[in-house]
Length: 104
Image (tube, rainbow, N blue to C red; front, side):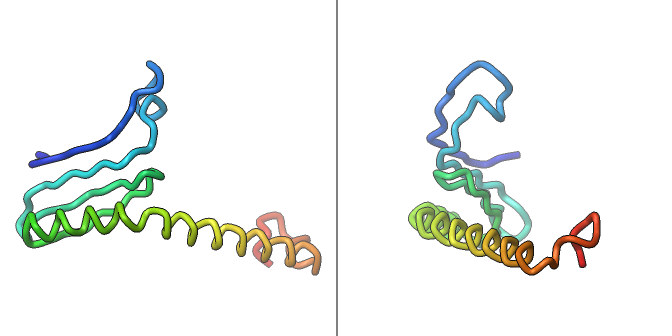
């Protein structure tokens, strides 16, 4: 059972719940044996789940997670670009041509 939650979600249409809510900041705090299970989503829809001992620690984690959304997005985009560049280099060198699953 969720103890507390909050979000900035916006409905965009009447289709399924997954497609009808834009990715916005959201969180859920659930009491557990350790303290609180903290689930948070940033403005890009990226999800994290951690456990904190107090509501204060949970609140601080959520705010910090939201504040660093742009940094995570930039890091993810850089990683994506690096992976695409590695794939292109592998194709050019012929590494990805012999096996159907490309795991040469």
